[in-house]
Length: 199
Image 1 (tube, rainbow, N blue to C red):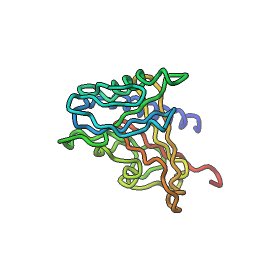
Image 2 (cartoon, helix red, strand yellow):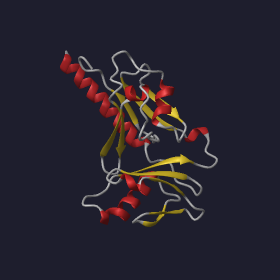
Image 3 (cartoon, helix red, strand yellow):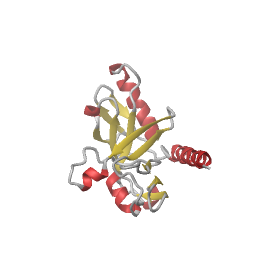
Image 4 (cartoon, rainbow, N blue to C red):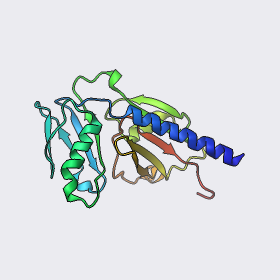
């Protein structure tokens, strides 16, 4: 029975990530958009950039990047290619929209909640929504939630890999400062695991 439940859980998890991968990267960048760029291997490169009227922006080591008319995934690939000579292995680059001019409600992002949450499933949120804002909108956790180990899982459809960001919400409740209030992307999955014994 336990092995059957585990199989079903992992099948549902795989379905969520497959759906997330398809939803990601559909938005085409426009002049005037503000983008958040994150480089997993070198956080000093993380920054906000503004797409200029010619559809381009500058990025360290990569020079001028054409973003206008491209999807977020294509912009990620262009940055990764531009900075790759500075890394021993191919860098993991993530680009998200912080602000876009004249963005309507239809341009929201799909965020998936999974695990020990009161309202699991898909929630459509405004672009620029942070991790903490999303958690506040979701409806809370079950009494079995391991709030010290809440994860954001971000799937990169171009590489097939996923990045995992972990947050200790218990420490935040106790007054700790959040070091990286991640701006969510279309297709992100917020996973709240079950508490371990004596956790």
